[in-house]
Amino acid sequence: MPEHGGNLRDAARRYGDQDWLDLSAGLNPHWYPAPPLPGNAWHRLPEPDAALTAAACAYYGAPALLAVAGTQAAIQALPRLRAPSRIAVSAPSYAEHAHHWSLHGHTLREVPYAALAGAVAESDVVVVCNPNNPTGAVIPRAELLQWADVLAARGGWLVVDEAFADVEDAHSVADQAGRPGLIVLRSVGKFFGLAGLRLGFVAADHALLGRLDDELGPWQVSGPAQLVGKAALLDTAWQARTRAALRGQGERLHGLLAAHGIASSGTSLFRWWPEAEAEAFHEHMARRGIWVRLFRTGPRGIRLGLPPDETSWLRLGGALEEWRTR
Image (cartoon, rainbow, N blue to C red):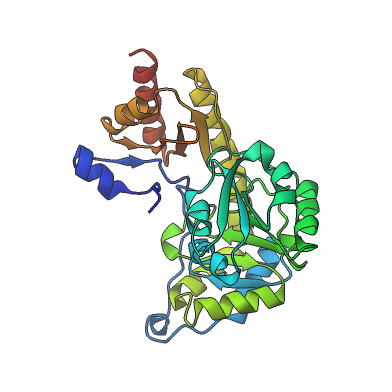
């Protein structure tokens, strides 16, 4: 399986139990406060909640959505809905896309993010993270919609993973996902900081959503996840406060890295840079109880997320200073 952030047990096994500062997953460190749940939320089999779907359609601006147990469920299922096809996945990118499209008889090419436009004419399916994970690069909305039309004209798909688009959403295409061939993935885990909830959404035309629903089967999303997710999606005041706070924290992280000689790119939730000594940097931070995301290939680099409090900011700054002056 591909490597991921958030694997603190791996960190503890290798470096020992300590007061870990986990910056490896790119999540909002100030998660949405889950409301109290009725007892029967744990007892009843979870039926699809039309109110959750309506809240998600309003929040994402999408004409139709399917709730799934995290977008990972859709990432694994979508390749099973096509006959063997020519697939182009942006690279570097969230590794699960390439991993699952390499299965089921498909022919996979990993294409540099900047070269994706050229791959559209030679592919049946193009998969892109927008903003990109881990680099934060963005493809303009108009260009994505043009790609979607070209692919759809020959029965192809454009799959756009917008997991990190809640704050930087100017180029979201979720509102256009009713057109054939355009599939948009949205996550509750990143912006809302609720990765453990395992809730995400797929926006697409009704026919494709029906096929995906059949493929995934019944009881896809737990009752508690539906209730917490609905509360989060409806809480517009919390969303507005959080967007403003994350923009400020993202700028602070960018500035902190720059002050220590690191030119990074990214989003409000994480920063990334190609690091010539990536393994050494990762080891340096781990020895100080700071867990960051190491990318060993394509290209080698480091991604880290937002510290949760002032003590953690100072701790990260001290570790960066030690790295700079080593």
